[in-house]
Length: 209
Image (cartoon, rainbow, N blue to C red; front, side, top):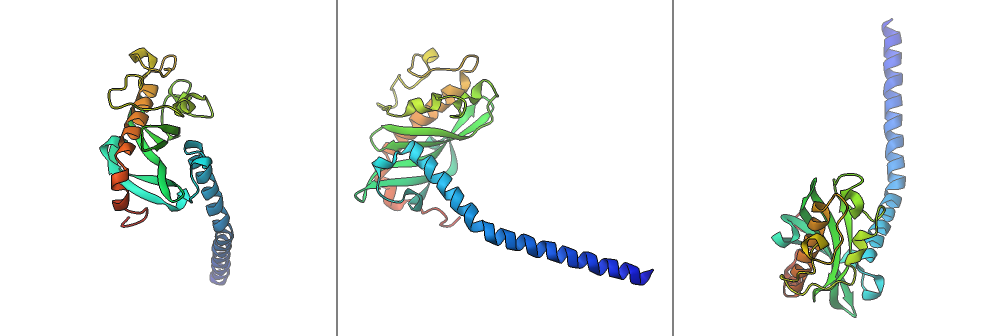
């Protein structure tokens, strides 16, 4: 009986070791592919908010970290710098709308340094399905309407939903969500106007993290 238990124990241990080894091999073989696909997806997203014709550098390689309450909270946000002929021309930056109906809404906003918004996308939210989730591109083109808009200072009344006298549509039965996104994109564009003077002092992504 004891010998039988030993044999079963050894067999189980060998099986576990083999399974662990196989998992490690599969992970090693797929890790590069997964990382490559993730990089391609990130590049596609960056190009949605800063069109490729605006820059000629590798934006993904020029990643910096910024922390400012204008971005919705004091959490560090990543910023990807776009250059044309080695001159900084625009950025794609993570930002937060802290006052969504169901919590914070995470965004990626592309803009130059003169108040011109090039694009915006929602990357994470918890808004109500069928109402506030229309901020998602797969459900509505609403988020694309920021492209080409200009922010003319803090008092620019156009940057509000139509219910508040602005230019942006609200959703039927859901005004809080679009109002929060409009405010976040506006504040981000205004913040980016102040950024050129700070570019040389920004920490690089991964530095001291």
